[in-house]
Image (cartoon, rainbow, N blue to C red; front, side):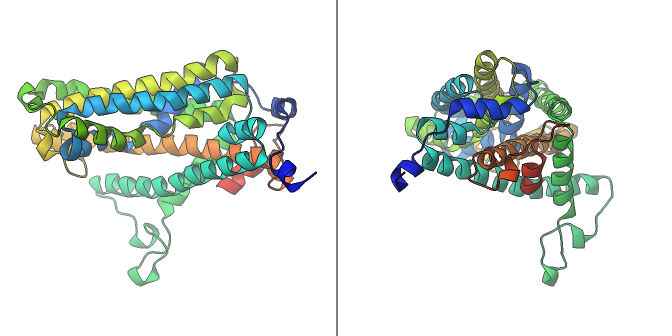
Length: 360
């Protein structure tokens, strides 16, 4: 076999299906939507609508979100089609191996692993900062030495809250997918409840005059805004990583992926409408526009609750990213492109524990 034939060798779908039968098929469409919302809706829902409206779109930020959603939906439908037809672990990595060959799958797989693992590393430090801020609100303060990166010159040696939250998530996932999805769903419900709380409180302070002019930056501003908020939708692809563990994937995978995109789009638009109605878009170029708007209308107690939603958003995002990256590492190990032991599944918990350990 020549080098060209080797690198473009297509993997057997039947072999993938046989290997992935070791997973428990426990996930429903509702679980997939919960996982998708957990990955997509993070702290960005309280930041992007304000900053992008202030700098690019104005109140027409709602149209920017719709345009970005339409573009995302083309990728979402591709993922839905592939994952329902090829219900195997590994998402785009495995799809690439089966359809195009190993070299394509290899690059797709590592791009996704870097995306997932680097995002967890970054978000865990953000979680630590919000957690420390929450503790400070109750008059509690962790020692400086354990709340920052290894920087002895400035008195910090380890970011312990960031480390502990990653370890906790790995522990929960190692207990089995059913347990971790239950916890994830509870936190997602809390997060959505807080978003709804903001909408219910904020709608009483909406002034239609704040929506005029609706498109202060013109059509170009709306399109630039769409390009900016496109990144708000990143994460729906993690749903495809769970295809091997889904009941009736041909039916539930499309529902999970398209349902995630539809619900997230609706939440982004509603937050944008209320936020730009509460306060002029010209004042929203701040680090925390939603909290800023709530403080402006003297609803400080809701602003405080928003920090809890931020923690919930980061937690669910890390759960789905750690889960997805462990399945990717498993898939690459399954194919022998990483050490074979990474492609093993624990017979008791039905989880790829060794790949989970490497990810953690």
